[in-house]
Image 1 (spheres, rainbow, N blue to C red):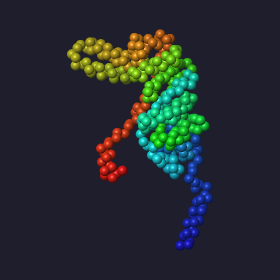
Image 2: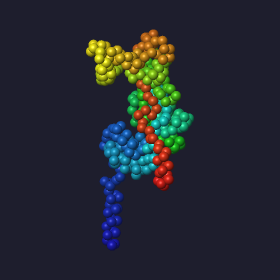
Image 3: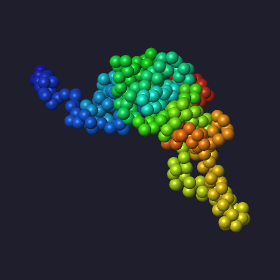
Image 4: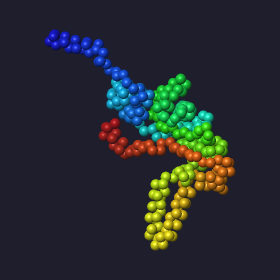
Length: 321
């Protein structure tokens, strides 16, 4: 018995001082980690973006090993906030030089979306994004905000407010040779407009129109050929049973197709602020030409959990709380 204990003690001691017996691996390439790997690890663990990036670098991009290490360090969603759906929030805007930026920041409830500290965080995220050279989310979360990374500020805000808070996406437009402007409606819809010539104020006016009318395309040149063909097929099917001659049907289809494009292309729409000219005419009057627009809305594409009150009551009655 004593011999067995001694052998076990020797084995433990040898392992403890062996140079290869370590819980830490050193990455051979700090640039091997991809944004997709960081996103996957965040979804698995709920840990912060910078924590995920750091441990993935440590384990050469091995998501499973990185997840295990995060759990060992206690960084993996201890309070499970990161697993809760955050589909409310705010669109924040910032402009630096000729660049305009929108950032969507999400929270769980409309109440928190109106909170002053949440609003200030969203604004600081937008300002940090406007100072970047790209729309890279990893770079944004690592950006310095008042001496701390944006990710650290976010984590502290989660602890303070008690809700899942996420910086979801960046949208930006602008260059040295173009003019940009932005409009945010009720903190929930954000629009960027970029034009040649003109003024930032003109961009803002057009952005207000985009927020209201939600066009699908900026100009007819932006409409993908497959979208036109699909619409043509639908319109042809609608009039195929009319009994009219083929040439008449073709003219009917093309007429309706032109109407579809006029209704869904920004520059062909009637300018909503005056209702007396098209957006194209407004731009021409101000010596400007449309380049493009970006429109985002809080929570779009996020699947919200549908609460089943009856099921919840039944579960509570059964003691499954």
